[in-house]
Length: 165
Image (cartoon, rainbow, N blue to C red; front, side, top):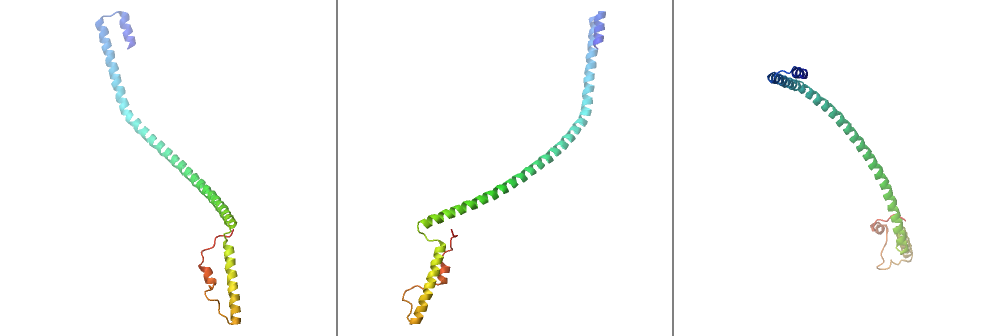
């Protein structure tokens, strides 16, 4: 087309011929554009469908990979949480023992008897009661009026003993 225009201008033909040639060239360009558009439209559908299929395939692959990574991360976090929980539990036990020891020492310093002390006193009172009963039986005298009879039943009614220090 450019060559045609150059020949026409070289030959110095009339303006009417130049106009006709330009019209013809414009018409050819128009028709070439329509043909390209039709071809792109025809093949574009095929290309579009192919691209959709490839995109779907890539999406599935990336989704599977992401789910795998999430599963791995969840597993690692669960393992870490279990480890931390067991370590914390051990630390709480140590802290509880330290607290109990310190409270026991403080109560002992204040003169508050421990569970062992109370058990020893109950055993001693029971022993004394048996001794008094034996002596009373020998002499024929009854136990003094109003004296409480401490037995194992009384010891069983007392509150649960604390852990020994």
